Length: 258
Length: 321
Ligand SMILES: Cc1cc2nc3c(=O)[nH]c(=O)nc-3n(C[C@H](O)[C@H](O)[C@H](O)COP(=O)(O)OP(=O)(O)OC[C@H]3O[C@@H](n4cnc5c(N)ncnc54)[C@H](O)[C@@H]3O)c2cc1C
Ligand SMILES: Nc1ncnc2c1ncn2[C@@H]1O[C@H](COP(=O)(O)O)[C@@H](O)[C@H]1O
Image 1 (cartoon, each protein chain N blue to C red):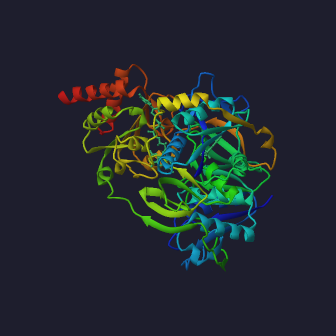
Image 2 (cartoon, chains in turn green, purple):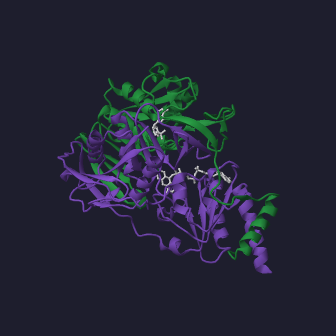
Image 3 (cartoon, rainbow over the protein chains, first blue to last red):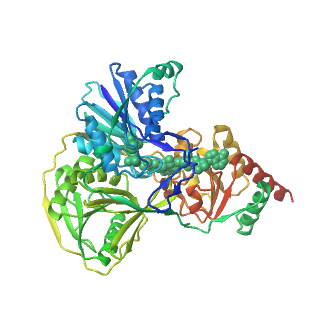
């Protein structure tokens, strides 16, 4: 088996995005920490579990982004993945999933993966597009929101279980090669073991420059970034912790809720 | 400028589902600004629909479309797109919609914007709104030179109640054969959690509670109220702190209590979908920019571990009085 896991590096969700002066995009301060998109960590874990069942499996990791994404790739190698590929793009601006998926599909073309894993969405942008688009470009089947993945013994297809709305489920067999976008809850990602951390230290990450491929058809663009309005009254309680607790009790009491 | 808008009907067993009407409303908002032809596409087998208000209807009938598969719906959408030549395709952001919509975008060479929750016009300039940056900022997108596929969040647009008569109906009898998908089986969830349905107060735990031991604090807070129950976000359930049947959100339960208290929940669209019908929402979160505050009546920027015990003390003090 040859498996590719696509990972995105995302900023810590408690850090504050600051809209650019011209409101065309937003960025983060220098002290922001970044890590692997939570859903992608589940994807890496799922690949490792498959390798435990099918020992001759090779797991490649690919990530598109600026220099800092090497730390996310490194982390996947520490979890146990075999090889890392960095599709280098020296920009934090909006990149359409149409373009990202084209870059990854091009990368896959000669490598003949049996299975491609992505997260169901990225935590920060939540578009959920990149995975299915890669599959469509490669002409292979895909399933999103996958909560269960089983290899069949002949290795010619996989059985996946998708999570639908309101807790309903749907299972199906997909012919390989296929792409699976995993949902959290499919597994519990492991912590890197010491031996894998040491091994990852010595492994090279292959860097492929991809800025040039940004030219092409013009897809959707972000025209404006602004603060969100509020859907509700949104009163902020002020004061010390004790004062806020007292004030909350009082408001709830006035509404006869307590 | 004029548009050709294609809508993919959301259906179940050949019946058009209500969310479709929200898509038609979205399309008609666009049509009100610039002349547009609107065609709703219904993939299925022996559907019982004959027409639809606010749009023409194109039925794609095929044995391969008896139930939803990504592969089948993609083929149906591509077939319809060949006829309709749309520059905007509108699909519901549901577990079926987000499964195949990006594929249709890739195959038609279109751009794609998912989870759209509003559209706006400035002159002729049409923009699509969605959240980004962990829901902390609003983003306005516009189409590029390519056509565009959008998925629309259920509930974001009103149901269509325009007075226009139903449009024309046409049928394509297609022969859609699945090459890569087999053994499709649907299953329904385990018993629903009726406790949440009846609770007047729900105290909901998110990833922010940090560890299983802190559930004690959430329970203690719940016991300050009558007819209360505890629930959680998806991450709280994934971590094993809360049972999955008490997960609130898109894939969990939809709740509408008198009071919903979100403890350490960030406020992702998928969580909001399950609790936005609550009468009063209180949120406790240490991140002053957390998206949950946008959906809250009372916002408390605090560490849970210091605030909740303080609140419990306050409630006990009053109870003793
Ligand atoms: C198809 C799909 C369906 C989904 N369905 C659902 C669903 O039904 N329900 C659901 O909930 N999610 C659902 N999700 C997941 C959803 O996108 C989010 O990942 C999830 O809701 C996040 O849970 P959370 O808010 O608990 O965690 P996080 O997003 O990690 O947020 C934790 C919050 O806690 C705060 N915090 C941390 N520590 C503290 C502290 N000590 N004191 C105070 N605050 C603190 C942080 O500031 C942060 O805001 C779905 C996702 C997908 C893709
Ligand atoms: N920059 C990227 N590099 C590699 N994979 C990505 C990147 N962006 C998104 N993906 C993959 O696509 C999935 C969905 O992301 P998105 O379409 O941004 O919601 C993620 O979970 C990743 O697996």
